Amino acid sequence: MMLQIKAARPRLYAALSLLAGASVSDLHDVNFVVHAIRTVGLNKDNRDIYGDDNRFMVQGQGLWQVPAEFASLMVLFGGVNITTFFDIGPLYGFTTSLFACYLRRSTRLRT
Image 1: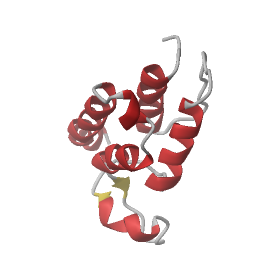
Image 2: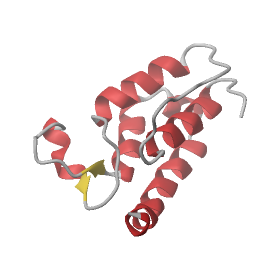
Image 3: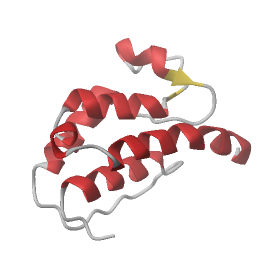
Image 4: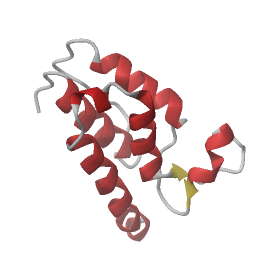
């Protein structure tokens, strides 16, 4: 399992770099955030749970969220004054990493 996480890290780092370097207007653009999420890739699943985003499934670790839904949530939360964020039960930590990076850039999240 550790080898699969290591292989997925470059994709995660690329998405984090996109978010960390984004302009404020990009951070409020759902399509930009969807692109960053798709950069990480989606966890392989044979149940067709991602709809049109199935083409972004990767071997090994990825995210378990539908990109448009997760991006919409991030943009929504980015528009309010969130100062703390608590996540319970991360599997790989990819979702938490993306969310924390996004919120740190778009709100006054303390890290």
